[in-house]
Length: 287
Length: 294
Image 1 (cartoon, each protein chain N blue to C red):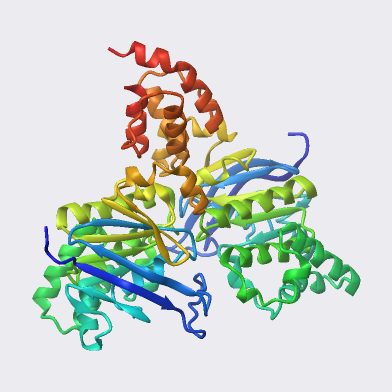
Image 2: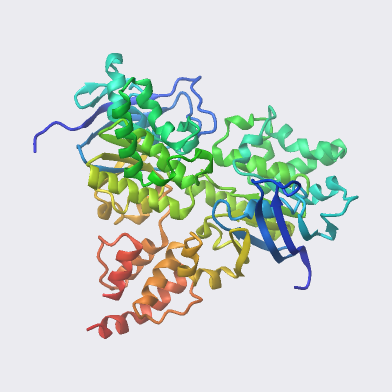
């Protein structure tokens, strides 16, 4: 296939200016390069996981994909549009939506459906179209029955679904999920990851899933691992998980089932390297 | 239990109990528990299960609607309770404790508590130095730095040092590692273990993530809908992964894997908890497992 990539990151370098400080988040260290000559092509419809420990540059990379950050050098093209072109930034951000760690930072209204409608209303869309988009977004994330509740009555997992719905209502082609599960309980975490996969498979959305949790990468189509502002590993999950020693060096915690499977393989059991979820590993052990 | 440091008897808590209020909510229902002195326990449950409400009774932030809470001999419901004395014994670290840092230097931040206790300067200084050492931040390297120039994990350890400097007997931590990455979590728990083992502080962890407390806690209490629904060692609780799912809790991934294998007919004892134990058993059984399948 020779079609041009959906998101084309070309030799991007970026250093945070000394005053730029996000409150309550990991503070980028001014003066050291957060990204160093990173190139990456992301295909339409891909499920890409960007792995790395805190401070590795993964969030900085993600923020370049929807023009929240503009490269110091190099270019990022989204559907062929250069993110450094100010006149294209609104269109790029409608194409590539973003979900953050704390859903409360992107929930505005006092009723669930009004919150989803908000971004459409400020864009001046007709009421009938807004109603249709809100219904679609509620349905896609599975919170239709909660539409009349105030957001504070929702659980953490439900609020993260609401944040995703708010982005979906803009009909993006891509969603960047930046550590969007890190403040959730383990079951809600799984449900949100399952939702991202469902949006990818059933709605054809490109997903860029940024995380420090290896288990969230198990079902990705492709994984890139970042360290010191560079991509240091890239490939399908089975390839990435084949080198646990390297992942440990990159300060990523190895899930115990994965570790167990590797050790059993080392003593001669035939356990496929493709088995990366608890269910798949159990099947391989029993087989 | 020989020497419980915290005892609750028939503890119930109803928010807005004072009036006939439509928003009345029973947050805790008839909780009976004992926490052993010097142990590390975890209180587990999803959002809204009552775990934060429960621990807020331990330092008198909340009083029981009915029932009693005795903390290190102090009756939390007593009219003439000395709250200041209670809160020196029971330190509480809330979620995102780095948000409570405020002083211009690490030293001043950690010294705030001991200074409020009206200790003399030398005592304050020695407590700050010792608290910083306990959390792995050497006084020499960190005391004069701004707490806001540290990494997320380091900021949280400064907050921990701030409560340790008051020499509490009980340390209550509400979701202490949310938002930290794997390394930050491991470090935080490493130093916390030192606090328990070397200083004999009783630790009460509040969490929804059981995998995190698997290696740290001696005893788990599971809350659901304001009720204490299960208690026991991590080994015994994690072996009931199907039951846990009903309360929207998940056992650590390894326990889940072993539960799946048991469902498939493998004879794995319920008490297996660690990677080493699982490896030893599955390695031994490998011939049987593969030979036995049709």
